[in-house]
Structures are given as structure tokens and as C-alpha cells.
Amino acid sequence: MAGIYVHIPFCKQKCRYCDFTSFPDKTGFAESYMTCVYHEMAMRGEELKNYVFDTLYIGGGTPSVVDESYIAMLVAAAKKYFNMAENAEITIEMNPGTVSASKIALYKKCGINRFSVGLQTAVDSQLEDLGRCHNLSQFISCAKLLRGENFSVDVMIGLKNQSLEDIGKSIDVAAAYGASHVSMYALTPEDGTPVYTDYLNGELPDGDEVAEMYAYGVNKLKKLGFVRYEVSNFCKRGRESRHNLNYWRRGEYIGIGVSASSHIKNVRFTNTFDLDEYFKCIMTNRFPVIDSTEIDAEGRREEAAMLALRTAYGLNLAEFNAVHGCDFEKIYAEALKKNSRYLEISNGVLKIKDEFLYVQNTIICDFLK
Ligand code: SF4
Image (cartoon, rainbow, N blue to C red; front, top):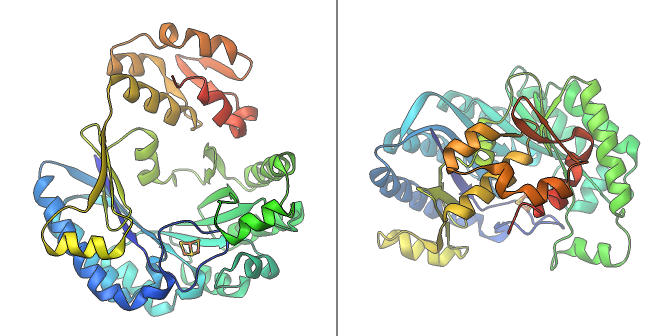
């Protein structure tokens, strides 16, 4: 089974921390863009006839900023051009400042069965500081419209002037309004974004403070019945994101739209980040790929180890050895020895101990050549 990712690069306004491919001033191009997206899907569908796709993820940007009829046509195009599994997971990302009852009704009608809502924080002054286009009350209205649905909420930690109580409030609000999944991410001050200046000015919490926030959040989520299944992802029983699980299992996926990346037949490739270039390629029936790398045997092993160790499921040694035709414990003997206090092997599964999952990056680096 494989996944489909579709990137919608439009937003109402640019958040102060954002370095994703999003064009707040170009929503007028939405119709032309979506037409190109349907065409790219048709081209890729032809090429991937033998694949069955069991997830479709509509991300961005802000997919909910474009007219809902475009999204319905996108889902219809996915079903037309790709072999979609009957019970496919179909997710859309939404910004609470861009939703309405009629939008959500059409999303549900066209087959979207999972929603990912960017709350980020339940504190309005922090939302304003992040440059988000919504407030807490809009999130609550959105969550009420999603009552009974399978929906995820994004929560950020590491914000300016954020207390542990603020993080608790964000998680409480998500849980109280019925979220079945929470993604809890630390703010990354990317160079070139306004938030980077806050970082340089020493206005953001330092690494130790963020680690404390993370531990607080993990504990809070646990008490509310959310299980951590990946370093940043928590869910109620059976509500894991199938689309993301496929990424972490080194599964195949096709990316559609500007800046989207793909992994097919051990080749990783990325579409252009330039909107005009994207239009030109699609209108002349060319794939808009700007970068493509074939992953060799060593790269495949490293990717598989790195991705599996991020998850709470860990790495099944026998499966790994069978897939990669190697002996994991022999190849990585040095890294295993060096990190023995952070790792555990139980029933043939290697895992980073629960309490060290947050610092997985440092540990995983030792498994990369
Ligand atoms: S809504 Fe998301 S993609 Fe859009 S500007 Fe904000 S962070 Fe970036």
C-alpha cells in the first residue's frame, strides 16, 4: 500500500515562523493551480497503475483556504486516476480561521474522513504573536463542527512567553472538544523568518525549557488517554495517522503539487518550489521534478533505522535483517554500544527508551554513516 500527498500552497496570511512553501498573496491562482494538480494526478496515475493507495493527505499551505469545490474535485480526481483502497484514509489540513459549516459538510460528503486542525496554542496573544489568522473561539467553532469525526490537533511548544499552564490549556481544549489525535511540535526558529529575530534576541525558551515543556505535554496527554506512537504524535486507541505511519515505515508515496516530495521504487524526488515553473511544466505535460536521488542499499538501511527509531514501535530486528539482507547488530555494533543506556531490546525489537525519545536525533545520528 502507498500514499498520496497533495500540496495546496495558499494561505490567508504568512505566519511569523513559517518557512513552508505557501503563497499568501497568490490565492487568485487557486483555480489554475488546482487544474494543474488534477492534470499532474492524471499523469502520475497513468504511471502508477499497479499501485494501490490507502491514504490521501491534502496538506499545505492551507487547503481549507481554497473553495471547497476544488477539494471535492481533488478527491474525485484521486479516485478517478489512482487505485484507491476502499477504506482509504483521506485527510485534509485546516486552519480554524478558514472553515465554515458548509465547507466541512462538503469535505465529509466527498469522502474526507480525517481532519488535521492547526490550533497551535489556546492563548490568543500567542496566536497573534505567531501571526496565525485565527483565535481560540474560531478553533472551538471548528472543533464543534467536527464533533464525532476523526480529527487531529496541532499544538506547539517553545513559544515566546509560553508557560506550562498554557501548554496544558491547549491540550485540554483539544481533548475537551473531541480530538482523537494530537501532534505536539516544538517551534523551530528557521533562519529568514521573523521568529528567527525573536530567537536571536533571546526571547524564545532555551533547549532545557523546551525539553521541560515537552515532558509536561507528554505527561498531560498520557493522563488524558493519548498514547505516544511517534516522538511528536499522540493518539487515542486506533487513531494513528496511517499516512504518517507509511512515511515512518519507509513506505512509498507520490507527492503532487509544488514542492511535494515522493518516494517510489527507492527513488526520492521533489517537485519544483516555484509556482510559475510548476505551471509551465504541467501545461507542457512534463513532471515538475527538480531533484531525484536513488537510494542505495546502505541509504535504505539508514533510512529504515532512523525512521523506525523515531516511533514507539521501534525496529524489529528480524524483519529488518530479512528486508535488508544484513545483520543489524553486527553492522551497527558500535552505535549500539555507545548508546546502550538509551536503548532497549525486548522480544527482538530495538527501541529508544521512552524517557529518551525526545533526544532521539542525537542517538539516531550514531546510526548514520
Ligand atoms: S498556515 Fe501553515 S503554511 Fe500557512 S503561513 Fe501559517 S504556518 Fe505557513
